[in-house]
Length: 444
Image 1 (spheres, helix red, strand yellow):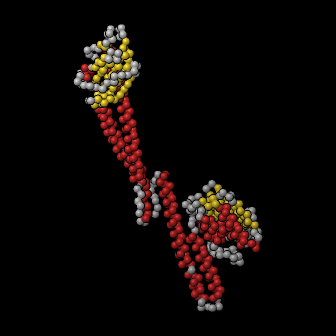
Image 2 (cartoon, one colour):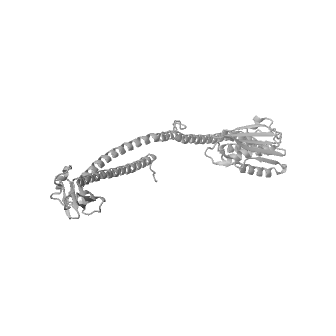
Image 3 (cartoon, rainbow, N blue to C red):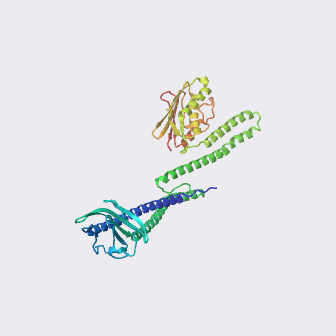
């Protein structure tokens, strides 16, 4: 058996992955931006040092480079300070280096076009260096000479600053990620708590401790619990209907069987008694089976187009009552649909139309339409109409014993309509003068 991870596990895993991806992306972006900013700041300081060298440089009458003994930047005078400078006088192949380079051989850039800046990270004997180089055509009092000024700074300070920032950044981001993950876990527990309560209530329903889901839930879960309660209610109504049908059959068949048992002692009355009681038992069985098989209100049934159902019933009745030459009129929009079981639709419409055709003289009219959340069905005929509207809906009560039938059609329809939370009304037709049956079904 294959087990799927729970919703809680899926959400936690998804949230953790998204959080890690976001924190990692944001951290790398911030770290990269900080690194670029620090690098630009270091190169800006190196550029300032180049300008400092330019301010102190002079050319004598022969074009030789003359530099001051010291500079405002003290690291240039301190051997091994990490800041090193060099000036190349290209015409005289003259080379000047700061006092900080004593005992070292930094890799300076010796050639560069006039007016250009160059920023590099160079590898030297003492490690890596940030380098800024500038080419300039320097004009002294009497002569001009192209100079290349180059400044190197030990990259260790830059790396140390980046490392400190990265350590601080990832420590705070990591802590924030843990706090966010804990917060998301608490939020998920709070958000999924209604589902846990539903599961516990369903467990109590399974153990018979309660009959339906009773708790109050958010709108997203309330739709589920409402449908679940409807399903439970429908199932219990169906079970009750089965039990009642079996109980009714067991009770109602006792009398016909007792009559048959008595008739066995009177051979002369036996044929009539058998025929009468068999007909009665057939009526009882037919009614109870139809009643038990009724689906009732079906929120989960698909929408059923009603026009084809009416047309099929009309075609069948035209054949059954061909000798009466009835004129059937069906008024139903072709796109009208209703959420109802197909068997229930045929049972309701078929019984009502069959009853109308049975008593009609020449005409049967059917109209089906929808008003707001209600489905209305009206069937009229030009027959004698109902003499007693109350007794007609009772089992085995028939208006005329000469007309074939079992006396259960409208009784079954009445129970089916009631199971759909509807209403059946019997009256006299103002249009055709006979019987009129009005049925109203409501949206569940």
